[in-house]
Image 1 (cartoon, protein in one colour):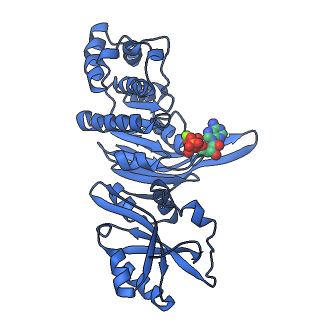
Image 2 (cartoon, protein in one colour; image 1 turned 120 degrees about the horizontal axis):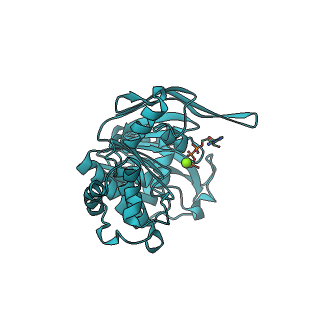
Amino acid sequence: MITFRHVCKNYTTSGSSVLALSDINLHVNAGEIFGIIGKSGAGKSTLIRCANLLEKPTSGEIIVAGQDLTRLSSSDLRQARQKIGMIFQHFNLLSSRNVYDNIALPLELTGHSRKDIAAIIGPLLELTGLADKKNNYLSELSGGQKQRVAIARALANKPHVLLSDEATSALDPETTLSILQLLKNVRDTLNVTILLITHEMSVIKTVSDRVAILQNGVLIEENEVGEFFTHPKTAIAKNFIASSLLQHMPAAIEEHVFTEEQPHTHPVLRLWFLQGTATQPVISELSHQFDFSINILQANVEYIKKHAMGIMIVAIKGEKLKIQPAITYLKQLGVEVEVIGYVPDNIITFT
Ligand SMILES: Nc1ncnc2c1ncn2[C@@H]1O[C@H](COP(=O)(O)OP(=O)(O)OP(=O)(O)O)[C@@H](O)[C@H]1O
Ligand SMILES: [Mg+2]
């Protein structure tokens, strides 16, 4: 439904030039929710604004619903854009209009009669849960309700595609969840293809079917979301996942940790419990088979779709010679292991 082919975007301002997108190749299937995650400045907004040509790429093709947007005349582009809805972090609604009139705006611009407009808006108010708010002004709405209005407005012209630029970034976690649920519902009931960008892994986890990472204008890694979380391929993906699971060493311990082994220190391991291994009693096996004492410093196991996924940080006390065989044993079970430091034995206790 959306295809980027060799898309580059260069910004030139006052003599200096920034390569915001570098040879982007991407295909989003019809009816899919595709998430793009990246840090600030990665090029996410540039990418999503290219998907409706709000930003014109320097080179490359952008094909939406079978049309290469970069080759359309301005009037054909205007028409194509009517079938591409967009929502934003700060809603971009008109405060001078009430809820109903905000949703009606794109329909007025496309010349619909008042009767047609009413027939379209009724179901949209129901879908977005705004039926009892239709006469309210924006100042009377919460952030989540404003985003619902923006979603209804974006859907008014029955788009094939909905673009979401950090649509939940200004909302609290509970409201975020309800908006993401609404987006899923929109996809399920209207079969709208959704491309969303975010800097939050929790958004990707909750709503996406597939995900790609954007870094410095380059698409680094792309995968089905369960696979992405359970079998990350790049260090960048692992870092995103680790940060989303809050799996860093506790600060009180980290400040004492050495990067190289010292006398009277114990290794600290980060264990990645991949698909199917998270619930196995790996830890007790380690202590029985290798006679280790294990101190769990951090642990978090989550379920993404049907995949169990977890990261655990443990300190290990035991015979030094057994460490490497234990790591090999863990790898055989599908648990990835990283030694992330060495903690002095006076900092932590082992049972
Ligand atoms: N209109 C512009 N003119 C010049 N440079 C720009 C313009 N818009 C973006 N950039 C630059 O392009 C790069 C990508 O910016 P972009 O806004 O796409 O990133 P982002 O991933 O959306 O970041 P954030 O998460 O902070 O919104 C940045 O280096 C930015 O400074
Ligand atoms: Mg942005």
